[in-house]
Image 1 (tube, one colour):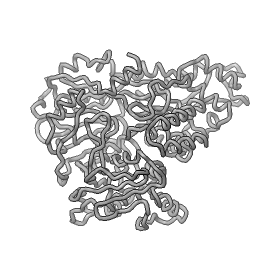
Image 2 (cartoon, rainbow, N blue to C red):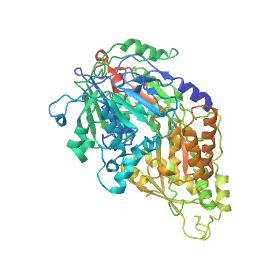
Image 3 (cartoon, rainbow, N blue to C red):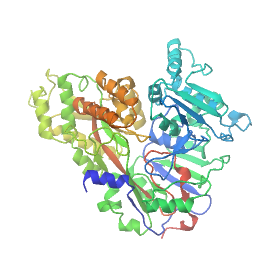
Image 4 (tube, one colour):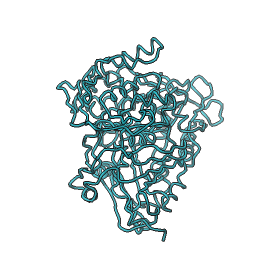
Length: 603
């Protein structure tokens, strides 16, 4: 199947289902069990950026809006908002009216009082992202939103080196009354409404909770959502339980007319009170084989993303394996709205800089890397190659856009290196820099088995063109922090979008986001200008043309080696009812159920 046809098929909701039953947990409270392959960092919306922590946060905190769990394409629904926000004609003012009678989970911080959610909580929540104390990864996007007065309040705290003044009014961020929030932006933003769906950023936080727990707030998430945190062992296990004070919310998701599986789910669950399970148990295991075996043995109800080394065993030829089908295991696959890339640190003395020979080195490294082998042998076909940052399912993704910059071409890589003076002058088989000094690439990675495969491929690919590479190992969370500080030469990671627009993928090269989203520390005034121009435009041909022009900068200057967009294949046991992967919504635990009649002992 051609790449275009594959993406079209997957975007339409390609799903394989089977019937039957298989072993799992014993009867009793409904427990949904899953595993993370990378450890969480904590549960404070103002401090985290990783998808794993955000998934937990999304089930505890609530933003005003959410996406419909089943609707495709993505459709906005109410969450804590009473009606859809009022948006001004110039796309600068957003007015949100909240539902009365929504309460935070009981906590000692509230001194025995049942604490209602009010508009002022969202004002406080957004101000926390501006407070330099918390070093919020979300601040870059909020700063970009240019909420009138909020950026100035942050600068005041930075310049004065005094605590952030939460009591100082902000003109563009006001609670008009107990249940009405108004946000006014400094410039038009036709897509800003989608920010109101991101629980991990806009999830309401109560000031009393932050005041009580202070620096330990990461371990004390208190929200209005369907679940609450009851147990956390760092990098080991996370346990959520049903929030006993959660308001009445009934299942009312809208399935596409051409998706029988989702239609069946919607019919079966409509009218059920959410959440439907009593407990969520999350374990952390960075090794693929134990996660795979735990799922097969019924110790885990859900396997997020089949590990690449087990793809052939699970979905040979892109069909569910017969031994899994006989057990009633279900397979769900979609293209992720993400981009996997290897960053090149442009402040590094070896591969950084914008001089022609440095750009040529990065382009040669990119051409030398065997992306075809990564996709075929390591990822087992579960990724499509990227030609730009814009991912599938977002505005800005163009199936017909092409470039030679991200292809695998050893001959062109060698020619570039030769042309710009990266030669083997001493005959030891390794190239030196144009001035004759040693050349060594440093690839930062983790020590798990899968990461070792990527490392080995990088080293072999570089060896083929005469570039020496060594590896440095560390924990993913530590490397994330180091990448923001500009301390890693090369590091492979991903960027997952949370809204159906590709703008969030292009921020990774905007100069004012250096050290936050822009971990390559790339800077180009013309690119920044293009980004600013597209941001205020409504979706259409003019904006698409600007995004297309921005794509050229990734090919020409190579701040990142773009790898691809992952295809996410998930497996669930037959007793898990209602699961469908949503491309943007991370807080989905409330929409799945456990069917007790299908729980039984291993055969």
